[in-house]
Length: 332
Ligand code: UT7
Picture (tube, rainbow, N blue to C red):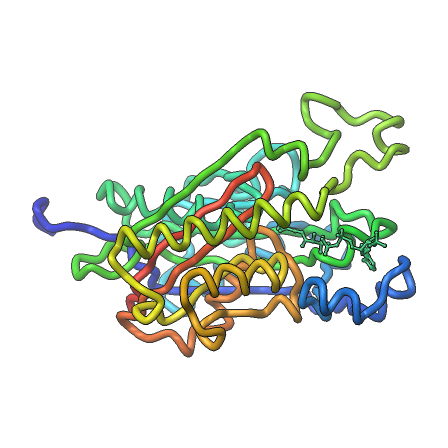
């Protein structure tokens, strides 16, 4: 490729995976003081998937994603040059889950790293991966969003256990000279948001002890209402800003691919962008909030409805706080 030609990072394949076991609202009714009606009307969720088998971790959710991507593009895992894994539920604190995925999937020549941006992880990874492609140093970068949230959910806490599920999704990025792919991104973070959404122990601040375990400090802590308010504003603001600076309106957008945390947050974002609701990907009812996996899982489920040239906006808000919106022109 001549060096003067502009390179963008096109998504050339998508993969997704959810475990088989379903945890329905009715199952949760038997575990905590809640009910199906409350969960459906307050969040939009009906059921989620849980990785139950002992000895299975986030990497095991991600390996089928790599396999699907390779099959779709007709390549061997050995051709993948880099794997970026966005997750808050790594197999282990270290080494990086990206390395474990590469090993299990046979991506022998890939280097990789984990990226932690909670629910915005896939978007942060996508922009990072796109930059590697745009730098012209790499031609095949895989970005995975995966979380086994069931590993860090307290199933006696009705505020959080109703929301989260397990899953994985990912994309292959390759260079494109025709203007398809990741075109623009607005990414933000604000560490002061850590007060509202975090895990108290297990890090260097509070290493694990018998006391931290007894106090249930290794689970998700969330002040739902506060996060909700920041999320509604954050996700809608960046999505609107992204449209404006690219001189686009809702009419120019084929799909909004929002992080699936709460249907009410998604509706607010779509309304702010002037998008009709039939252009919004929504699978929260079946998978709940799979953190870094929600956006690529949507792309995977809708892959047959996406057409070459479609403008799509990916948008997220999550722990950190982190948030952002990315504009993609679908490449195939
Ligand atoms: O993806 C990462 C970012 N996270 C998010 O974006 C999550 C944002 N937050 C949310 O989605 C919502 O805040 C929740 C779904 C977590 C909670 O919904 P909410 O509408 O904010 O409920 P709330 O906390 O204001 O609680 C309303 C009422 C309370 O009862 P009272 O005080 O009004 O009598 C709660 O005790 O609902 C009660 N409640 C429940 N009732 C049945 C809270 N959780 C439940 C429950 N089942 N699971």
